[in-house]
Length: 289
Image (cartoon, rainbow, N blue to C red; front, side, top):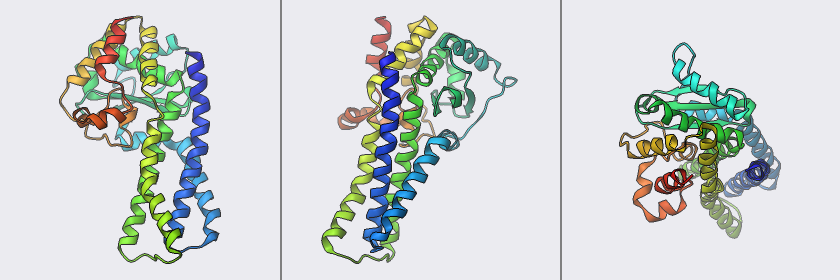
């Protein structure tokens, strides 16, 4: 478990480096596409560094804003606060900031760059539809993501993937309405191919958040609560709920304890490339503890 935590920290720094290269390459490819010349390399690197730096330090705020999460006060949500404070003591980490997403679909996620700057967001549906033991199981899982430094890795990916996709989409929109497309045909072709492939590569980065990360968080969460059945039952309820999570999107879906984009289960290929293990397998492992 401690080896996994150390590995997550190292992968976070490696991801930062790779994303700088990918963003720089994408911006430079856009420069080639619009015939902006070699002088575009330095600005491309600067843009990549700025985007990466801002993603690292402000990604939690961006993700919470995208998810329409609002702060949960002790006066409004004493039940939730009591659960989180107790598990924070058990996990040996600071109490994270708490947020509520006013949506009836049950789900939750953790975000932030480290345990000292972490946040947990839960939906109204999670609070309404789970009993106390099930809620503890979910919070224990999210606490484990924080303690294992998964949140740094997941949050960086969610924001940076979105940035890359938006840049690529912007290029096509500008090009469609008369942007400059001069230069050597081969370089132009390479630029177009890179721009097309960048969002795909970005999506593959999300797969770096392996299924084993979820299994590890399940196991560590069960260790915190000393009751694996709580999380197992919660996962079954969340998976069986048919209400869609309106604020979910492809950039943030992998953050949640259960993939809120339900249609992925119906396609073999989508299921093959999802970052979440099948709920059946997760429940089986929990009940085998």
